[in-house]
Amino acid sequence: MPVPEAAPTTGTAPTTGAGRNTGTGRTRDAGRTTDARRPGLLGPAARRRTAVLAAAVLLAGTAAGCGGGDDGADADGGTLDELAAQKLTWKPCTPPTAAEGGATAPSPLPDGTKWQCAFMDAPLDYDKPGGDTVELALIRAPARDGAKRIGSLVFNFGGPGGSGISALPSFAPDYAALRTRYDLVSFDPRGVGQSDGVECLDDRELDAFHARDATPDDAGEVTALRDGLKEYADACEERSGKVLPFVGTRNAARDLDLMRRVLGDDKLYYFGISYGTELGGVYAHLFPRRVGRAVFDAVVDPTATAVRGSLGQAKGFQLALRNFARDCLDQGDDCALPGSTPAEIEQFVVDLLARLDERPVRGIGERRLTQTQAANGIAQALYSKEYWRYLEQGLDEADGGNGALLLALSDSMNGRDESGRYTNLQAANAAINCVDDKTRFTAEQVREKLPEFRAASPVFGDFLAWGLLSCGQWPVPGTWDHPDVAAPGAPPILVIGTTGDPATPFAGARAMARALGEGVGIEVTYRGEGHGAYNGGDACVQRIVNAYLLSGKVPASGTVCP
Image (tube, rainbow, N blue to C red; front, side, top):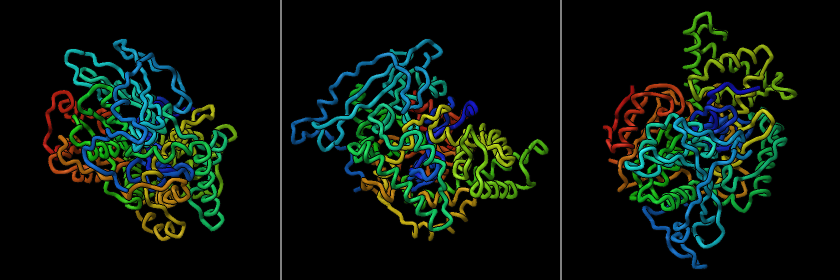
């Protein structure tokens, strides 16, 4: 079943299992993922991405040094300076790979400008810059006014695991004003899409994985959940073991600085959304004096532990569901869902999920809608208010025994197209989350946390709590409890929080602004719904961001829109 146009994707909604999906913002093309998107709800990593509830999908030393050079020679005599001197060969873009979502080559922009693609070499291990390399895929659209060009504006749309090669052409109309003075640039981060993408389970195995019960009710179901996660982790190690230790956010931030140099910019001009804000914060910590103008939108709380971040997501998605229920009731008799109060509609959702846990309903073809996939589909639709009408329809139809729409929404979040092919979104999400997050949880620890998670969200609490298991059997140790983003000496960075954001709750923006440091984090509040303010179309937010990126005008911290 096709996903309705303009579905938000990955980016991370809560899925059960793999990582911190924070989503990649909203995507326009069915089946494409972007922080957005966002991968699954569940998992420790939820704290910085938006997790999505995909079936037990893996949701999930501190970054060192400020402004370091990272230019020293290794034992083999190689240096980053040699890689920074490489010349990119820009060519017409080919169609996205299956790992990026497939589809056709990106269409020219309205003014006829064609997209250009290239590959950049980066060290696999930055401690050995003369050793093995990884290829990073880049895409750009040149600035319209070359005489007034500032430089390259690099985008990361979230995930982690979202393909920038796929996302930027989809979102480009939202950023048309910025192309007057910037080349618009994005990339597949290491481990993602064309950039030596992580591979784990095959498509058939992923169908079974995402349909599994992610909220076990007894010892046997706990064992099945852990066995599924172990199978997933073992497949990742078998197929991608060489790159798994090196796909974390700290290395991605160092890739950004190498990319800045290769693109010929003295400073990094950056627009990060969802998980992209965490990546941007780590970059600012490592290279504060190389930050140019930067914007963080749909902000991950960099100070949250795995538990606190997942609890925040539970509350955020529950708040979005409550707002959805109020909106439905405001339609009067046109609301298709049972109940006369938001609490009654929420209870209807709880009851529906409980029934699906016992007996899945028909979905698409021979596939059935399970409880986990339904929760994932609900989370996906809560990323954007424009998607609420599909959520209402999907819940009503699932209650009547037709789970096709909720299953299509879940597929979109998990990166599955109508032919059954998956992107590598979830695999990359798991790999990045688990090499970043140091915490590893046991089933006993999860059980202790369940009452707190259920109090935070009767709908999503169990999924996010059990998602804490996602990295427990990962073959690579984690790096930090939470990233260091302190950036003394960096210029102002706009930090935009949306009050109704389900995936990266509003409080994360204030935490990021404070963590960046006084005079660095400039807080902007958008009073609205959805995951991401700028590409949500708010004129006030766009005016502030455009004035900053194009003219350097810094708003007063604490500015509120609308």
